Amino acid sequence: MAVAVAGVLVAAGAISYAVAEDDGSQEIPAADSADAGFARDMAVHHQQAVEMSYIVRDRTDDEEVRRLAYDIAQTQANQRGMLLGWLDLWGLPKVSADPPMTWMGMGDMASGKDGALMPGMATNSEMEKLNTLRGEQAEVFFLQLMTDHHEGGVHMAGGCANRCAVGVEKRLAQGMVDGQRSEIQLMAGLLKERGAKPRP
Image (cartoon, rainbow, N blue to C red; front, side, top):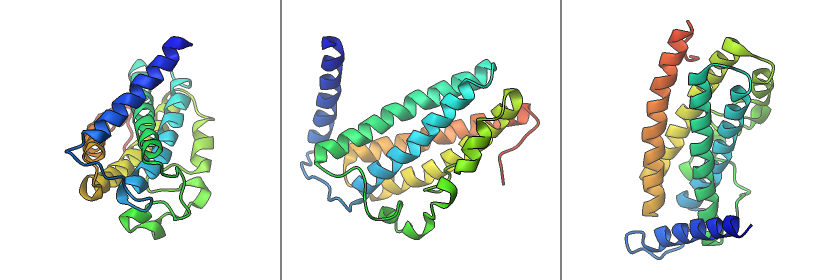
């Protein structure tokens, strides 16, 4: 228990230090800022990617897809923790009455139809379908869903890289853009190996 608590304190301290030493800026972002909006929205976006990854990991024996799913789950869970940690540090709410993507001037695009709150997110029906598939069918559908998800994530992260004011968050966002673009290419290759393509 003591080790776990110590780990949390170290992580919190690292986040505090990163923000405090952020290019000399001590300013706290406003609740309606791009920094806060991105942190809230990407935390939600990432949570679905983690969920999809664990679903497919348990529905295929293919080591390459299982490894990719595990990497995505671990990376995005860690990034989500950082985003929520910053909101806590800034004393800002983790939810907003504004529609998702409002910080990008795209609040009207977040219809929330069938649970897809933001561009690239899978619908509730698609998540249910993924839960019914096994083997190569599960692999292909996961890779198609995650490609869409990453494309939406790249768009959002690029928005923060351009609009956010907190340097450490801008750098995290740019890292998301680079990492997810690389994974999109990897997933295109995995789909091709299975005689499939990304969805149009």
